[in-house]
Every structure is written in structure tokens, then in C-alpha cells.
Image 1 (cartoon, rainbow, N blue to C red):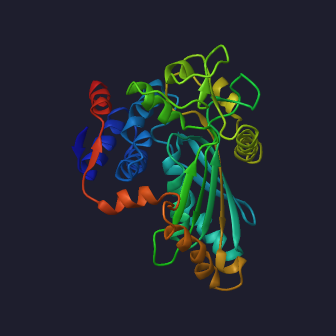
Image 2 (image 1 turned 90 degrees about the horizontal axis):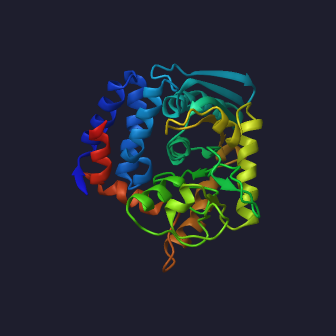
Amino acid sequence: MATMELDEISELATTTLMRFGADEANAGAVARIVTGAERDGSHSHGLFRLPGYVKALKSGRVKGDAAPTAIEMAPGILRVDGDDGFAPLALEVMRDPLIGMTRRQGIAMCGVIRTHHFAALWPEVEMLAEAGLVGMAMTQAMPYVAPAGGREALFGTNPQAFAWPRPGKAPLAFDQAASTMARGDVMIHRRDGQPVPIGVGIDKDGNDTTDPGEILDGGVQLAFGGYKGSAIALMVELMSSSLIGERFSHEAKAAHNGDGGPPVGGEFVLAIDPAQASSGDRWAEHGDSILNRIENMEGARLPGARRHANRAKGGAAEVSDAVLAEIAAL
């Protein structure tokens, strides 16, 4: 591992993306996501993803100068057209209009379309919680996961994220895939020569395996919890594709050129004003009552607590030498 200051990580991400055709706005938005992931210890969504962003720019599949736009489609419904660029800038464009609509009406949703998503989902819901709103988000991906009982990859890893505001404290925020393990984590296990637990995926013949390479090369990943996780993955497909006018994961694959970069697709985001939903401000104290019980329970911790603990440390971050070598080779 190498030690890097956060501004060094940001500079590396920004200059690399701009060298391959991203303009300052798009490179900066992606760099903020990458740097935040490294800061919080979410290495599978940090610099590890940078070569994939570059591949998508080099192939011309993703617009490095995309200019996302926000349109109010109906009361409580916002659409952000990502202009075939990377998702981070589109999500930054979404922020103020969605927060404004939610504060006016109490609840609002956004369909983010024509974007290429390669990051974690917690940044967008966390920014809503920091504004005092409850946030939810979900997105499809490429077809990596088989429906329960099947052997054909049809669903994406289909993450969902949720954030709950805590006035005076860091918000509760979690982000989890519908698959047993996030795709990036399976890739890191292969890179580092580490096995994965049984249940993460099956090989090309449908057999359980602990070899991440067999899962990634011809095999498929599995949903967590069998039929329960499979149902959640299906829900994500419908909400982040059909509902907002975007592609299913298997349709995203058909539109992909195999360059190794992020797929095109959509994201569903929901924001709720808890003060209006509960007709008062007791929601914060009442919500904290259960969160505090978890925090004070021996052996338990709140989802996302490790990420916030890493963030609180500040300073430098440890980055994989293998990742830095791959970026240098670009």
C-alpha cells in the first residue's frame, strides 16, 4: 500500500481524466467521488475505478464534456438527463432542484437517465440527508447476477442506498448490493489472490465456487438471501429502468462496447422531508432513540459507521500499489 494525501488523490484522478478527454466539470465531479471513496475506506469505488473511467473516455462511448440538465416533469417528479456522461456530474446537477422540490412538497423523486454509473450510491443519499431529508436511491448495472434458481446472468448487482438525517450528527447512510458481494469486491479478491465465501457466485457449470476468477470469467454472481435478494434485485431493475424510461441491465449490456467502463443506465432517487411527513420535529429525537440503542449495544454498530470513522480520521489514505501501477501504465 502507498500513502497519499486526499488532495493528491483528487489531483491524480482529475489530471488523468482530463488527459483522456474529460472537461474540468466532469473530471472534477468524478474526482470528488473517487477521493471520497478513498477517504472513507471504500477502495472498490476509489482509484480502483479510474482505469475503467479512462477506458470509456478512450473508446468514445462516454462524453467527457457532457452537460447534464434538470427538468421538472410534474409536481414531485424531476428528470436529470445526463447527456451520455458519467453519473457524478448529473447527480450534482440533481441536488438543488430535488432538494427544493422536496422542501416545497414534502416528497419528490428523480429519474437520472443517460448516465454511466461506476460509483457507490451513498454519496447521493448522504447529500440529501445532510440537507435534512431522508434519501433513497437504486440503480441497475450490467447483467452479473442470476435470478434465484437460475444460472443465467440477468440482473445487475443492483445496489440500493438509504440515508437518514441526524441533526448535529453524521447521517445514517448505508449502501448495499442486491448481490451477495459487490462486483468491485469480487474483482479485488481476484486481484489479490483471495477466495470469496461460498454463496457469492457459481462457475460456468453452475457449481458453487470460492474462486473469484471462475465467477468473473463465465460464471455468475448470486443474490443475497436467495429468493429475497433476487426479488429486491428485480425491484431495482423495474424502478431504475422501466419507471424512469431507461434500460434493464441486460439491455445495457447490449448497448455496451466491451471497453471495460461503466454501463449506460438510470438511477431512481427519492427524497422525503421528515418534518412534513411527521408533522413536527419529534422525528429526529424518536429516530435517534433506536439508533442510539444500536450504537450502545455491545457488538453492534450502525450501518456505515466504519466509513464515518475512517472519514473522521482525516489526513492521508492508503492506496493499493497495484492500482497506482495500473494508472501509471495508462
